[in-house]
Length: 260
Image (cartoon, rainbow, N blue to C red; front, side, top):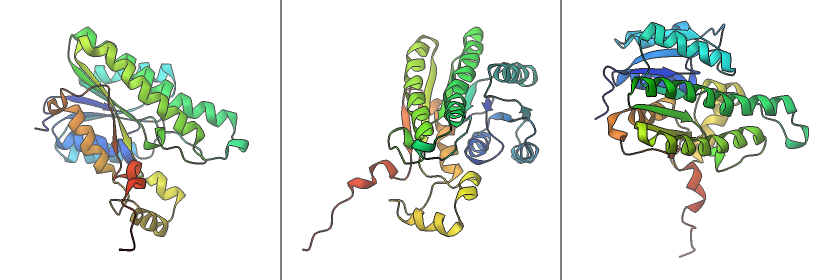
């Protein structure tokens, strides 16, 4: 049922990590991929080669999706090169861990701008493209379980992702008549290069064992969900923030042992 043949998917922040996992799994399902990453990305060319190795067309485009101008340029180039956009996977990632009392206001603004404003700009531009073509389509945001379960040192990230979930629902309501599905994915703790920059292998393995599924998630776990939400199999799903977290959000509800 997960068949994206003939579809063009635009994935932002896609050179590695969750964005790349989503691009790869949508390519595995048959989609051709517009692969975006920041200007000067050292990972974009290699990621594009891997997508092409799956037998798909890939259009790597450098653009800064943290700005309206960058988003406009990206969508313009994407349509010019690929001919159309059927699916948007919006994954602008920015986060800096700091305590609330010491939090740099610039980091706060940058995090909100990346996740929320960047997501708004990309989704509005792609939605206008879809409506102009009179074509159904899919808009998928990458959110986070931290939208619902705040952690210390992640103030702005949690706030941005919570707002992103609400924006997902609001956009979905306005897209009913155009048959454009709008959903978000809330990853739990995922094993990504960014996490590897912050934590050692020993910490990642040890913390993974504490989760209900006994491991951290993988980028393909999120990619598989993205491919599903991008496909016709999810036609009746819109306005949903879907946790893909191995039980992270409900881990506190496990049965309490008794002495019996």
